[in-house]
Length: 82
Image (tube, rainbow, N blue to C red; front, side, top):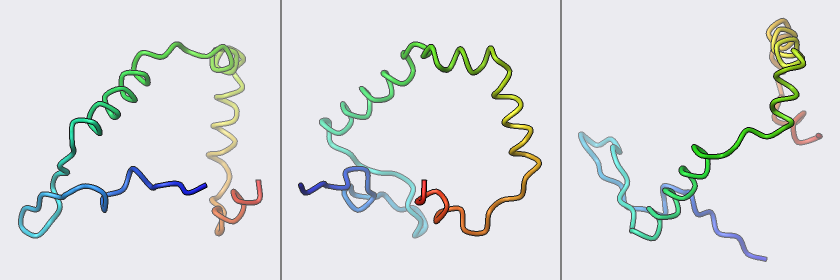
């Protein structure tokens, strides 16, 4: 199966200002895809797992524990192992 990297700056023309990329030009079909994704994100219902995690107080505990630990030097490799 061949997959195309759709969300790439190389796919769309860039608008430059003072030799720096400032904007992207997209076609209407792409705009409609982005609009649909953003609307779905903004209007989605909270998932029951999210409510459970929030109500349990576990999320706050996890955040405190994560704040105490130092960042891994090779976090990408550790993440890939998962």
